[in-house]
Length: 261
Image 1 (cartoon, rainbow, N blue to C red):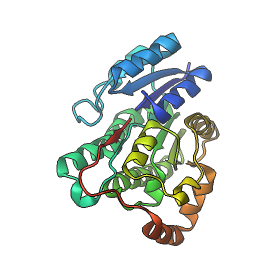
Image 2: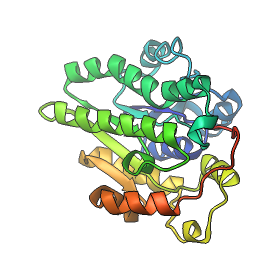
Image 3: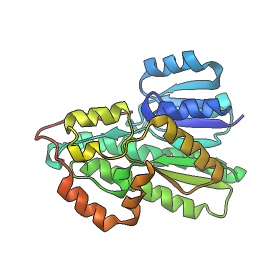
Image 4: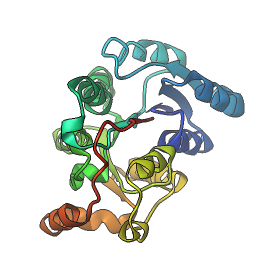
């Protein structure tokens, strides 16, 4: 049975990925902070899932769970680095503690987990690593300075790693979600209410994104940009930059609540 690990598995895109892979017959190790949500999923999905409680913002916890997950369900065949923390605020309203915590969750933890799991995949000459970046990694967005930096860093590392592993049996898929209907996205809209222009933009749903991710792994695709309309951001970066700078509404002054998965 395929062993899939999903970080940030308790809600949103992570939960959808868990359901997608369980539906495809895999065993899924769910990694997240919120035990009550993971336990509820476990109660619904049963023996097809395992629960790991870990705060990936804490460097002492980011990789400590891996050996236990392997002992429980076997070698990791598919690693999905999905856990994320989002800060929507003006850059000068974000203190260094918040910034560093977000970088740990969004960038440092995925790289650390890859550092432990990848050697085993290379030794087996098989496996897949999925890194969930963001459209903000392709099109850095005003009001999301630190989040854009973290997601762009993860995307760059992911794209680089795919090239590094091109002659091995290990594949790397980089995922760039645009607007997707999740609790994190709804929290963001509370900070910066969507303008009429934003409401007109395509919005995806987590289940459809999860299905596309699984298919991309099976096909050894390089990346998933979802909804597909946002692929233009990758191919027309100069135009995207102008539009974002002119049209993006800024968060109100002062510290804003963080979004986490």
